[in-house]
Image: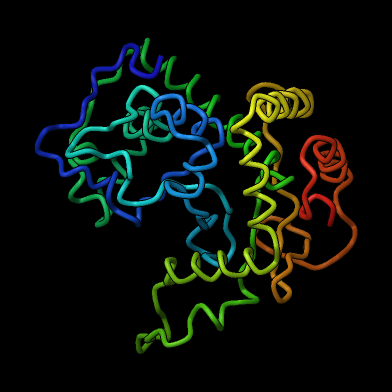
Length: 293
């Protein structure tokens, strides 16, 4: 299904920037890790430790301090061998969808105009997508959305796992040079390193490692499928739930705050629907995040 109906292939002249550039975030799910595990023969827990990182993906340019926490591939990709993918048959869905899905929904032209993508031949040159391939890409995107929802709920106890990092902005921007207009690019590498330190100190990283370790066992995989059935019952296949709760750091602990559009306010009047989601997920995914909602 990954390649069915597709005429796209990476040109030989491409230096595989998307596989190497740390500024292009490739979000992956636990199901992607399981697929890579089957293709590579490595344990899921080993892939989590050696091939992944926790990434921070801002929700929008207007407020780069609010973003989604998710699993991402390390860069350069550890599975890139010369110019070939060593786990191609089980590669992450994000890799399968790029760049065809962007072209299908009309985003390629927008990306082509950005400086960041000037050296990406797959973005600069249009690709042909057949009606059959469009149907498959739509199904693959639905799979990706559902798998990330499941992955977040199993690992973090909430989906999406939104983080407002304004409370640690001083630590992130320490030593950063500002322009005459008082602007500076947000150092995402430093931010992600700081988030990892705080999550390790707060005990969250050990919790997530223990959950991923369970996926090396058949019983752990059964637990993931049970969680999937709960998630499917809450949102339906292809369904969506708008984010209502985000988190902020208080020291090394994460506290929930009310999330409403782009504004964030503290408060205890959580949306009932979100509380219900957390209660249902807690049966299969005990975590300090869902316990705090």
